[in-house]
Amino acid sequence: MSLSQIARTVCASPTLKLNEKAAILREKGDPVIHLGGGEPKSRAPMDAIIAAAANLNSGEIRYTPADGIPALKKAVIRYTEEFYHRKVSPLNVIASGGAKQAIMVALQAILNPQEEVIFPAPYWVSYPEMAKLCGALGVPALPEDGSFYPTIQDIELRVGSYTKAVIINSPNNPSGAMYSEEFIADIVDFCEKRDLYLIMDDIYHRLIFDNRKPISCYDYAKDFSENSKLIVVNGISKQYAMTGFRIGWAVANKKLIEAMTNIQGHQTSGPSVVLQLAAVGALNGIQSSVESLRCTLENNRNVMIDLLKSFEGVKVTKPDGTFYCFADFSSYMKDSNKLSNYLIDKVQVLTVPGAEFGLEGFLRLSYCGSIKDITDGIERMKWALDPNSPNELYIGDRKLVRDWA
Image (cartoon, rainbow, N blue to C red; front, side, top):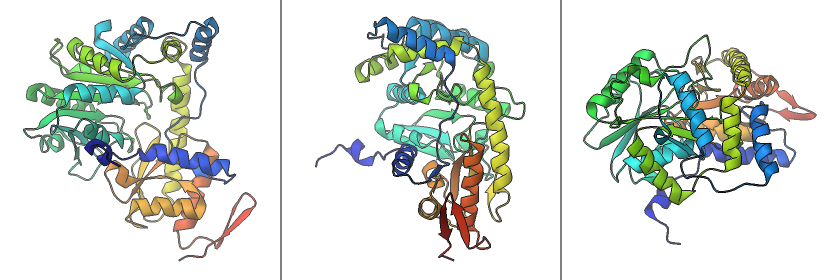
């Protein structure tokens, strides 16, 4: 079969493949624990459900503008003013089928073949593949000090004649690291001076812990003209636990939003009116669900970190936000893909290999599930890896016996 060069080089999303694998195992009746997922388990806000249901009940479910319905744009404008201290117009906003599509159409609007986009490592699995879809190149920037917290020097070292853009995801997937105000100020200033696009992937910006507050990149910007190359991306998936609704947005200069709208109009047209109205309901409705989810995640994080610290040889940095921790298991097995498969085979615990995020020897573990899943999952992992563990483990009524060293 003859496939395009892009089709031959782009890989499947490992996180989506894991979700599929978990669903298949559960359908078979296997007692799988999914610690690799990125979906909060709380329900969508009632305001979102009511808004969607009202539109469904009307029977008037029609096409929408390619850049989003006016009601959603208005809600995003209010949201941007509240959390980013920046007033924008409807022409500065595009609504997309999730924050992922917003980032994708932004990259398609700014990148030429062979150009480069830089992002700190560890990085979200889709950034390199998105660059490939544009015929461009993703360039990871691993912090020189070995931490999860980049400096402006780490970014500057990777900038070359082909660099077109920088993507910053804070709090970060997979590490949970929230970058400092100093770094955000530095990267905004740096990109303005170097005339680089800066994409702020802020999808987790309200899911932060230990009394931290969201950081607005606009607080450090100097260029507020329509030549600004600052792009802010967000959505409802994580903070409102509305992953299946697939609504995100981008805020940028009018000319760029127009170009993104043209691209999206030929790709998918506008997002579903039902889902956009649900997003309006969430954004304009009672916000207590966000704080409830944030508190639950903070407690879950504390439980997972305490359990991981009981592993001899595992190194873990306490996440500042998101619902992931990125733990170093290299003392047990340096090949993270082999380690992840080993845990599935031996104790039916799903994790995401660190290699997918640019760091070998690590596993991404999610704490957005139940406390029981976290405690049982980590217990199974420890039994599979720790040579000093008991010889037997019960998973429900099933007894497992260690037959390996």
